[in-house]
Amino acid sequence: MTMDVMIHDAGNNDNFDDIIEHLVQIIGPSGKINDMPEVAAAVVLVRVYEMTGQLDRADALKAEVQEFLPHEVEVRPRMAPTVANLTAQTRLWRGDIDRALSDLESVPGAYMRHAWYLSRDPGLESLHGHPRFEAVVDAIQKRIDSDRAELEKSGDNLPPCITNQRPKLN
Image (cartoon, rainbow, N blue to C red; front, side):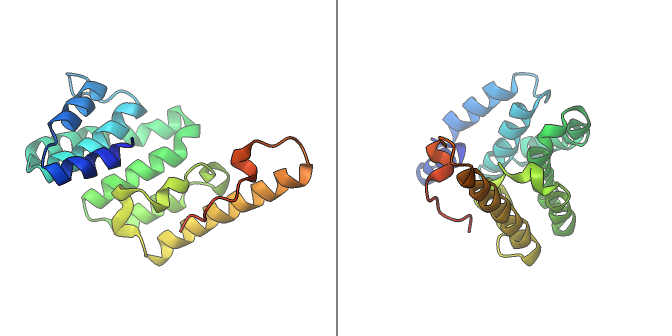
């Protein structure tokens, strides 16, 4: 079960206690963010805090995330798509749609192959339908389609995840 499904289910029951406890355990008792799993948990926890009216906690966690993310790509270049996604979400917290889109556009297409989740990420929902966002998603889909076609041409014994007819991103 994904965290978004858990949040949706909790929202239907107005019971976020289990989700908050789970996310706080991932981040740790200090609340200091030190790695990407903690950032991902913190971004979700910000949404939960906002949904439950705990705005001071949400703001404090936002500050932690915003302090951590800018240096992460320098340390781990492979994390560029994830950092772009999370940085875009932090920009949306401040209402900065243009810079959020620029963050997503700045990641080279080659590194975005695994970032199809963008088109479904609830943290980026306010961008859905925006022409620049749709262009990013379309570019990712084209890269996936191209890579799949090249692999299928090779005739090797391909895994089902490559050959299955999966739905398009949009």
